Length: 337
Ligand code: PBG
Image 1 (cartoon, helix red, strand yellow):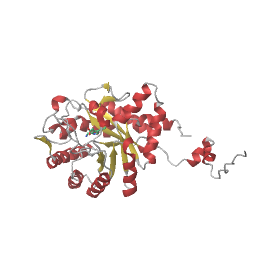
Image 2: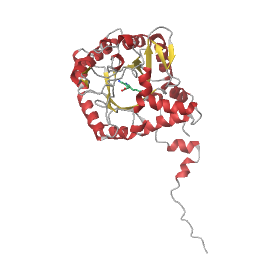
Image 3: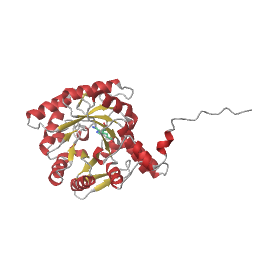
Image 4: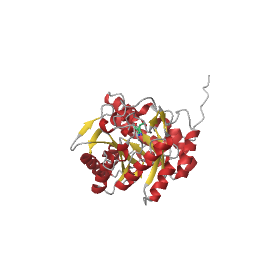
């Protein structure tokens, strides 16, 4: 029997995958150091570094070493560093007063970095959880997380952080109306050029576990965050949140976590064209580094591939604990092909 000849393919996609040169020409997306925001954990003391068990390679650093980290980041071309304090449990209260103490750890770190490395942008975290005796992002009364009362606290935090020299404020609390309240207060206080990167679409996620260890909030947290963080099943709601936060005066918006929510990143970017960021959160970092430690995946390749995914999904940048490692790879001339 005569075999039936398969038609000759006219479109051979493999033509452009044949060599590194052709792969480079056909590459659609690039990662650069300018896409990176590096989250760092701050602790008290001097010359102190302390590993975080569930985040291999990540440490809590005392303020002097955070300044060194900022210098290193600036030298690598990383544009921004984001500060998360580990607060002494003795300073945590139900009223969260430590949150707007101008001399709390986060505010000390902002001032120290801006004094030593003014060229790096300092991003902050605005939420009550590192200071709250019950681990929640908002004030709690009778088991209810209070929205409007919490906003008053968040505005205080925002103003103090701006006074300390923060460049980008990062409200991560998910209370309704906080962006507008902060923006108005900043304008009134003369902080017209302080940017707000709203954690606009933040999901109630299992991927935050290692972070809560890192800031010492895991033990403290009573219950869950489902009355303020989003249901992972929802996508349209994310668009409505982003629209609202942009209208209230956010300059940049974030989707968080990152890898399980790349569809949201793409939808947000397509719908608004605003500066859009993803947070590759602690659990995502732990999955990649944990599997790599066991020899189950190539950690560096997985890291770069995951970053490429964010860029391909439309993100302008990524908050990632991998930031220095990625920047070093890029500096060393890393190319995909
Ligand atoms: C809380 C906050 C969280 C993260 C950043 N800010 C955790 C939470 O909502 O419980 C998580 C970041 C990460 O997991 O890397 N305001």
